Image (cartoon, rainbow, N blue to C red):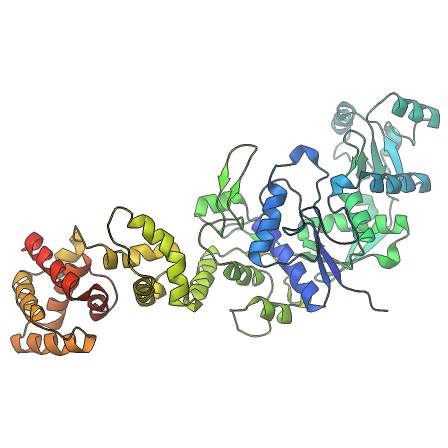
Length: 513
C-alpha cells in the first residue's frame, strides 16, 4: 500500500520567522498539496533558553497571511493544535521522549555522561580538534567508564547529566536525498551527539525530531541544507529504534544567499540594503527591537509566494507569474536546485508591481483610502472612491506599492503651493505667462470639458499662433501639477474639472508671472 504523503514544518519559537523558513514551509505545502497529502505545523521549543514570547503566534499568523494552510498541528484556528498526533509542541511531549531515551539506553545505543563544562573545555585544550566519540568516550565521565552503582548514585544526588548517542565507528552511513541523490558519510566524522539534558528535562532537536516524525507518520522531511550534516545521525537513530522501514524520505533545500557577496541571507543584509527578511513586522518582546515585514512594507502575499517559489526551484517553461494553484500543479522536488539561490529583492518588488497591476482600480482605491485620508486630514476635502479609483487607474503602472501612490497622485487632491525648480528652469519660458493668460481666456469660455473637446480647442490655437505644442503644454502642466510629471494632461483636467483647472492656472500666473 502506498504511503500517504505527510510533511511537517517545524520552526523554533526563538524569534521572527526568517524568509528562508517561509520558503521551506512553502515547498512543504506545495509538495503535500500536489500529492493529496497533509501539512503539519509542529513547534520545536526544546531550547527553553532561546524562547521568545509571541514568536509562536507570529509564526502561525505569518503562514495564515501567506495562504499556507495547516492541516494538522498548531495554527491560528487551533492554537493548541488540531489532529490525532498531538501534542504538537515539543515542550509538552516530555513523557513521550522519556520512553525513547530509556529505550536507547536499554539497547546500548546511548549512554549517560556527567562531564561538566569545565571538564569538556579541559579536554578540548588537551586534544586538538576534540570531539566526543568512539576514540575519546572512554576517557570521559560517563556510564561507559563508571560503574552502574556510581551512575545511579550521581543521578540520585541530583547531579546534572546528558544522554549521548553511541555512534558505532567506521561505518558508512547512506542518506538518499531526493534533491542531491546519494550522500555517503563515514561515521568516524560524527560525534556522540547529546540527545537529552537532565537540566531542563528536554531532548535535543536530534532525538525529538526523530521521535516526533515517526509518531506523526511523516513521509517526507523537506528542510534546509544546513541540516544535511545531521542527516546521517538521524538515519542512525532510525536504525537504532528499529524504524528503518518507516523512515521518511529526505530532501534538503538550497540556501537563500545574500543579494551581494557570499554567504547565507541574514537580517543584517536586509537592514543594510533596505528590504525585509521577515514576512510580518516583528516586535521582539525580549529586547524591544522592531524588524520590518513584507506585509507592512506593502507586499501582497501572493507576490511574496510567487517570488519565493522561484528561488531555488524552476518550472518547465519561461512563465514567471504563478498563483498558488498553478504552483501546486507545477511543483517538483526534481526541479529544485542543488546550489544556493541569490535573494534578488528587486525581483521581489517587480513581482509586487505585477500583482498590483492585476488589482482593480476600485480595490486599490479601498487600500489607498486610509493613506489618502491621513494626508488630507487637515483639508476640508473628501474625494469619492470613484474619483480615487479613476486617479489610480491613471498612475498605478508607475508604482510597486500602494504606499507609493501618494507621490504620484497628490496633485490631483492638493493644488501645488510650490513649483519644482528644475521643471521651471527647463519648461517655464519667458513667454509662458503670455501663453497661459491667452489659454486661460480660451478655457474660461469653453463648455466642452472632454479630452476631445479641449484638444480641439487648444491644438488649433497653438498651431495658429505657432507657439509650439511642447512649450505651451509643458507650462500648462506646471500650472496644474507643480512639476513636469503626471499622466496625459487631458486626463488631469478631466479629474480636476473646469473650476479647479482655471483656479490653478490663475494661481500660477500670480506666483510665476
